[in-house]
Length: 374
Image (cartoon, rainbow, N blue to C red):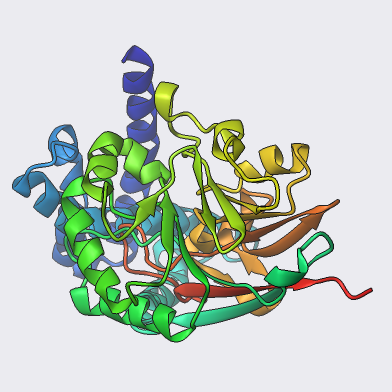
């Protein structure tokens, strides 16, 4: 507990420093907008006061998390970026423009940055809430049995079903998935936004799938942060077959679902357990929420791993295969091949906390397996 308290205190101190710097410079550069700046800064930081009860899983905590969380996160990102913009502007001012007051010199760079942020925020919100991208990915596997040539998997991930998730949006996601006519549907973790309270809303959305369509899922880190056993209990005997360090045989494919890497003790990931009951002729495919699972699959020379988790950073440029998540993670979007093993990372079908996905529209992946030509 002491370690967690120290980490929270350190993070709060860093965010406080960016807040103070940003607000002071905004007031200095845009003095006529003082009331607006203070109102936005105070309103967007109210969530700090609610941190002790955010994970209480009550109606009040769910409402506060859903309403105060997005502006808090948006403001925090803005404050960090604005601080760097002001630091760069100050550097230029010191080199070339000291004959003008800094506040006057920085006014236009500040206005341009704020305008870009507002415009990008609106576009990113639209891309998070409206479009739905179907990514069609053929994967060639040397060891694929002949009868599985053409086997199709619809891969979803990071739905993060929460208080403000629209039922119509879930219906659209699963109706689009059904239209792909896949042999199996996989949800690679982060099914709900921490709280098992939202599992019924998720299950209602799956009604757009044909009852005969196999649907499996694994736990994600957000299930672990909330109440993983509550999620497991809520999904027991439901439309979604949840695989927690266990496997399922579907038409000759053994889906080995591992628990998330945020899990501990009984919920720690165990790929050996997920493979233990695999029939000798069943073709293995590993499902893990985090791309960390690819390392375990490679050690065992397993041919294919399906993951999600990264969201593509909710900001990126697909044609260049660049995403914000790639700054921090080696496997962040798309298909990777290492030796005789391959990994596909879905960039997320929903969003986390802030409805913003600029350049990383929500993704449903249709994977089609093929044998390598002789």
